[in-house]
Length: 224
Image 1 (cartoon, one colour):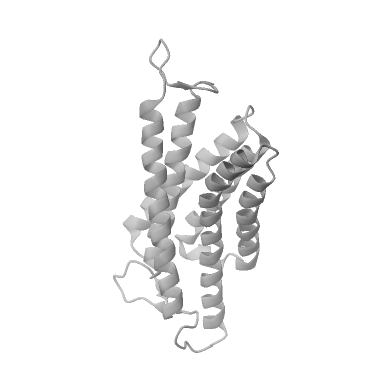
Image 2: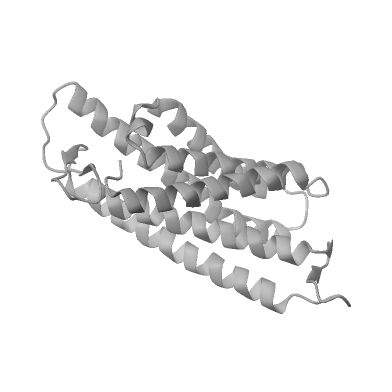
């Protein structure tokens, strides 16, 4: 999808690194609840899907299973927060924390659906009409090989890009603050309530979420 080789490789390395981090956290965070480990695994899958979408062969992957998967994932983030047995205050806090993840996975489902619908319309020879999904072939030297065709789709992509950018800035700022303000042990390493190094893990998790949202925002801008 991305024609600019430099940008394509930057996003490829970014998403591969995020996928590796998500898988590592899902497999090694034995002391955390299974819901937290599953959340890391879902982020790893999303990073791999974004990596594939940056390349032309990623457009050949089946779209419907991806849309279903990420739609279910978005619903799961909200359902898992609402299902917490703690009091209403804790459940509200969990829901607030889960909503950005639900938005990100929901945006991923929208992106795959928009691309799949456009590719299907092009394959069947359907014409592009105003406010209907579709893709325009980009001229030589453009950042992307194809862009969205249709006012509604483009404005939706712009809105999602702005939302993801806001989430990225929020997560990155919170990650920096978490790492900077974490209590220190006698040997100078960061620690937290969960034991030595837990604050460092939290800061890295927040930073990775922020980078994921930033990478997705770039992908949405490229689609426009």
